[in-house]
Amino acid sequence: MNVGDRVRLLTGREEGIVTRLLDNDLVEVAIDNDFTIPVLRREVVVVAAEEHKAFGQSASSVAAERQAAASAPRPSFAPQKPDAPTNNNVGGKKADKGPKPELPKAQKGLYLALSHQSPELLAVQLINNTDTDLLFTYGEEQQEKYRGLLSDKLGPKAVSKPLAHLHLKDFEQWPAAVIQLLPHRLNGDTAFELLTKRLAFRANSFYTSRQPAPILQKEAYLFQLDEKPAAPVAPEKLAENLQAQLSGNAPAKPAAIAPVPEPVKTILPPSHEVDLHLEVLNPDAATLDPPLTNTAILRLQLDAFEDALSRALATNMHEIVFIHGTGNGTLRKEIHKNLSRNRDIKFFEDAQKEKFGYGATLVRLK
Image (tube, rainbow, N blue to C red):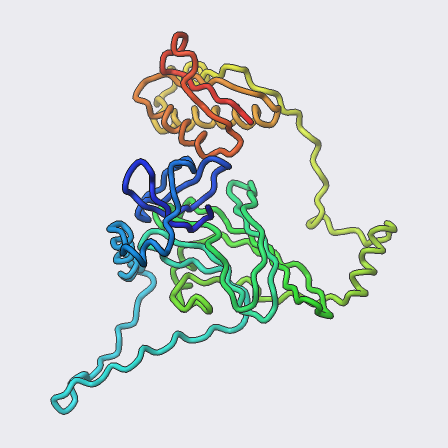
């Protein structure tokens, strides 16, 4: 099972697309390209292409394709030019429309393309519009934390499988894409330097980047990754650099490239039971003027939860209990959502109902 596969839920008739592999047992599925839910792998089955050929498309996939066929609305700051008027009635006869013109070919290069799977869901793909093979890695950076997602090889004039899926409704929360690119030619006589590209999407430039994508042969939000192509490096130069590094005679790197490492901070393990009630986290909260809003209280509790969980993982704890109370269930729901997407969690369940009722969650760590 891979990102981009269409799957069907075994517990119902819904179908969706796998948008992320959360861990060995959990995947994230976009139902009808509209909303995402975490699902156990054993509860979904991949829908084979042959099934659609033999039995026709499902209602959900037909609806999704109809939505995808409709042009996605563009923001007001990206005006569209009206189509030129055509005369389809010449001499009382309708003029033949003729074959549709081919999309213009983009110049050679490496591109990141975000194409519509539906009006709201975009697939992220890498396009190699060059004559060389390409070794690449793809990862995401959010809140100054990097997460590597995959590495692969892409042939010349080829498009990768979907690397990720992004929802337009979550545009402001999109992570930055970090791509490393290394051109390669089998039995070639030239080596190339590694290219690293970081893309942080901004609305004013994102929506104006829509254009026909090479190889894909459809419109996409297109970003060129090799505005400055990888510089060739002679093999003997590589040998000289390696020899200098091994002998200790390599030139020192600038501080901007190799910053002085900060002292290692000691990470203390959290308590086995972490109480997330407001009066425990902030005893003075009741006396604040103005009082904290519900949103601010929830953020304070989630920050304490995330801090305790990260320290528990860093110090190799086996399990931890979060006491969240019952209340209206909002905090419990947010905690369970966070846990279901964390690949370092073995499982979680209600903790000791005779002691906490339904007001605590036991988390078993890998």
